[in-house]
Image (cartoon, rainbow, N blue to C red; front, side):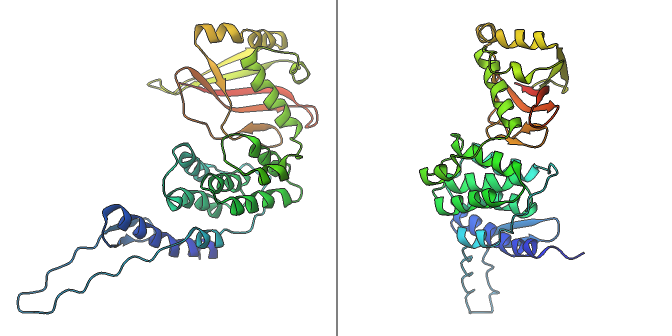
Length: 306
């Protein structure tokens, strides 16, 4: 099977990027040491001394060619959103760079572009690329990526994604914030935001409409020797009582429930990449609902402790 044309382009660009990064890090020219289907490796160029009988000196190795951010963005494929939740492994790699910003634009932007190329249909990947571009001051390119999401037809997930522009996780310019300011979040996202806020504030007035029957919180221990998940079932009144104990949880823990650093929603669930974990916080990884999309009712919250 022949690779997709976009992936073939990436395979041509990636070795050049690696060579450039190697040369910058070690302060001398580098070359490709291995490049096949499973391995891409670079190493400094080692000048081999000529035999004693040869007087001609070894010519200097050529300097590795450079690749610009603009050249990378030229190979970003067209966006055709998918209704099916997609694998986010590549997105997680790009988000890891957002958590720990790199001084080099290329070092940070390459994983974000890679995520989009790996799955051009991913709403999450497209938004994370826009966020990464904005963090590095490439606001024209960031706005183009956001406008791409806004222009997608029949894509509620795209509109929910651009609601993230207003958050502090990214550094979008005011002009980009302005074009997304009028975007209405979906009923699912509105419910998720209200419940996540209520768990920490202890106020229940805004969430009673989203509770109808039992719900559950699954808490997974991230620091245990063996990963284990503890489910806790709540009746409607039981969940309201849990929310009202917010101040008590803060005094005993403090235990603060943090939402994903970026929130992406489908027809039934909202989830997203997590910020850095903390022993005094419980990270919400997803929040799911049942019932009609226009009138969602809380079904399950999954969390990661530690």
